Length: 266
View 1 (cartoon, rainbow, N blue to C red):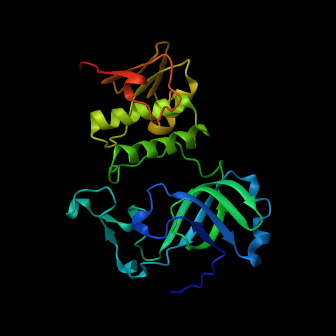
View 2 (view 1 turned 60 degrees about the horizontal axis):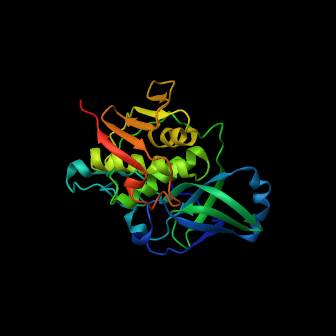
């Protein structure tokens, strides 16, 4: 068989209708399920997160494209090219999008999601639950595909990763984001070399969670260590001494109100 018939089960509703305006991590969105498929939502509230599969119905002329230069990749030459099966580009033989999203609530046939990177009006072709006993692969690894365009984009990416691991926003979690954002910018020009080794204060468990979520470091693999000092050390090259009292808005506060940074002589 060389063709199939897909039947949309719903449609995306959000504030973005143009691809170039869609943030990397998407925007708050909802899905309107068509009436004939409403019974398929029964007990969907059992799951905190869902896999959303959409059909990219705009730009279908890109279905013949097999190599692209991903967003964030600055090399326009052959070294910057990636096969479409190695990235999440909407240009691919079958323009199917796949994104995991947090289910905030269900209102009849409408599912409210924390964020989705599908354009307004995108047909939804399927919804599947995110299974914590099947889909979570914390030990997974991957090499960087394009670096963030700005410190703000890097901060948002790190915040999403930290929250997805810990489960909610917290001042210490945001502090971890600000520290690691500074480290990535100051030491690695915002790139992500991976393989981090981190030492964190044991008395700040949410801060520990933030670094586990952002770096995938773990004590079992010997990449995450604990100590009693109010200090975060990364890769043995950078030290962040924590300020005693955090401001009300950690994400927007000046760095000097959060930590003192110094490079560790090597």
